[in-house]
Length: 158
Image 1 (cartoon, helix red, strand yellow):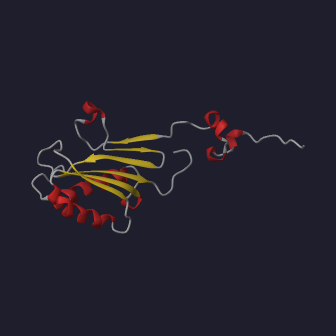
Image 2 (cartoon, one colour; image 1 turned 60 degrees about the horizontal axis):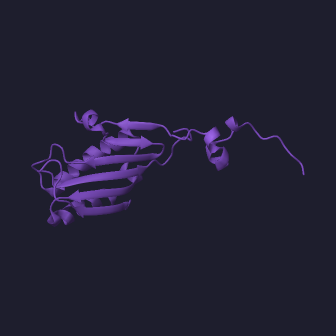
Image 3 (cartoon, rainbow, N blue to C red; image 1 turned 90 degrees about the vertical axis):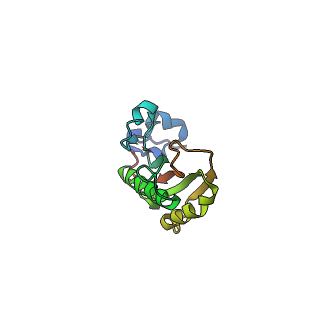
């Protein structure tokens, strides 16, 4: 049996290294970026509007800040504006969204919220969940939405 010297592991991309060597060769924690939404409560409660880890972006529950007097559809559109900004700061777009979670306080709003969701996602069609909850943080909010996205292209080191 012939034997050949192994190449230097520093020249081998992480994804091609056997699992048994992975901890030695590659960082176990991908780069993390916290995206602030500007809330004064972020450092007090300990949260971020979004968090990017590697090629994944997780958008926290987002309420319709500034649209408290709107109907459910108007509040949902406001959330999509806030989400679009946070996703962009993380390097993502709505095209990369793979999961949404919608929290309604009034069951009768499901169709209005669903239609706005469809305005943004009718072609993308992420896995989506819509649930009715007793209340949200602000009693005027009728909807809160979470999103998860995957970036289309990232470097191996992110």
